[in-house]
Image (cartoon, rainbow, N blue to C red):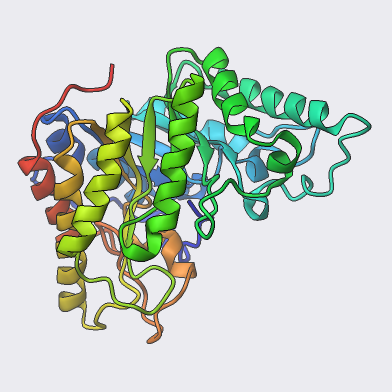
Amino acid sequence: MALSGAAALCGAAAPPPIPAAESLDALARKKGLRFGTAMPAHALADAGYSALIARECGLIVAENEHKWYVLRPSADRFDFTPADRLGAFAREHGLGLRGHTLLWDRDEYGAKWLPAHDFGPRPRAAAERMLRDHIRTVASRYANQVDSWDVVNEAVDPATGELRATVFGKLLGPELIDICFHEAKAAVPGAKLVYNDYMNFGVEEATHRQGVLKLLEGMKARGAPIDALGVQGHIGGGVDPTPVARFSAADQRDWRAFVDEVRGMGLDLLITEFDVNDRAMPAEIARRDAEVAALAKDFLDLMLDYRELKQVLVWGLADRYSWLQGTAPRADGLPKRPAPYDADLKAKPLREAMAAAFRAAPERRTWA
C-alpha cells in the first residue's frame, strides 16, 4: 500500500535462532495456501532478516521496487536494478515472487515527473501508449518468475466510491482499468491478475467497499481478465485515534456480505499486505501484543473460512521493516508492533495467532 517507513536497520546481524516450529508457509501449504511477505531491496543487507524470510516464507513481494517511482526515473528510462536484486534473492532461496504493482493509481505515489509530463497534441493516445508500454515492459521482464500481479492498486477513492481523478484517469477515463488488465493479460497470459485495494471492515468503510464492488462488477460485465481481489488487510487503529481492538459481530456481518459478493463474481481472494496497526492499543507490551494477536486471529479466521482465499502476505515480517513506524505515530511515541516478529526478530503472539489460523483453516485447491 504505502511507501516504506521502516526504522533504521540494525545492520547485517547474525541470523536469529531458528524456531523448531513449522514455518508459516509450511502450515499454509497444508491447507492449499501460500504465505509470504513484502520485502524492500535494502533489507537484503540484513542477514538476519533475510534468513528469517527465507525460513518462514514461500514467496515475497517487492515492497516498492515494482512501482513507477522506482522503475521510471524519467519518462524515457527504466531502472530495474532494485527489482532485479529482489528477484535474484527469491530465486536463490526458492521463493515465489509476486508483482506489485503495474499501476498505483494515485498521483502522489507515482513517478514524480508524471503530473507535469507533456503528452503532446494527442494526449489520450500518448498516455495509453505509455501505459501499455510500461505494463508490457515490466510484466514481460518477470514473466518467468512472477505468476501473480497486482495490476492496478487503489484506484477507488474511499470518500466517493468512484475512480480517482489521476493523470491517467483524466486522460483515459473509465477505460483505464480495462486497458491495464488486457495489456497485462497479453504480456503474461499465464499469470493471475489482481485488483488490489485497502477497503476495510467498519461502517465508515462502506462507501469504499461499494466502490470496489462497482469496479469489479463493471470489469466482469465488460470481460476484463481479472482473476482475484487483493484485500490489503491493514487492520487495527488506522490513522484516526479510535481504538479498533475487536472485530464486532456487526463488522463481521458487513464484511462477509462484501466478501460474498466478490466470490459470487467468480473471483479468488488474496490477503496482500497484512498487518495490525496498534496505534490506539495499550502501551504495555504484553497487553498490546495480546490485543494485536486476538484481532488478527478473528480477521484471519473469517477470511480463511473462504476457500477462494489463496495467499496471505504480511507487509513486513518484522516490526523494524514495517511502513507503519513512519505513518500516524502513536500518541505516546512508542514504536509500533504490527508484525509477526519484533524489531529483534523474535516471534510475537501475532506469529502464533497466524499459525493457529492456518492450522484451523479448511483445505482448498491451490492456485494452478
